[in-house]
Length: 111
Image (spheres, rainbow, N blue to C red):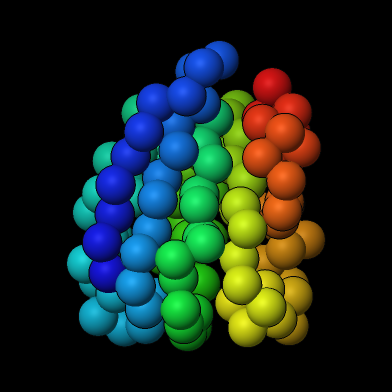
């Protein structure tokens, strides 16, 4: 699992995930996600290149989301594929972290 960040206009940090968000993938991004959660207030997590999402991957998204929200910030998930979105909906994570497929709506949700 690879993680890259990009600063967008309006103070939004785009986190681009690439690979499988399984036990190994979650472990690979855990520290970076915690650093982002501790320092950023508006985070867009780009899931376009995530090919698999397991339970540890869900935890790797949920823990930072709680930290960001706890500091008064916002986080959204962007453009998951059909399989990844099914896991998000089945687990109920989509009720805690909004999922957007259009960049404009994702950015508007973070404003």
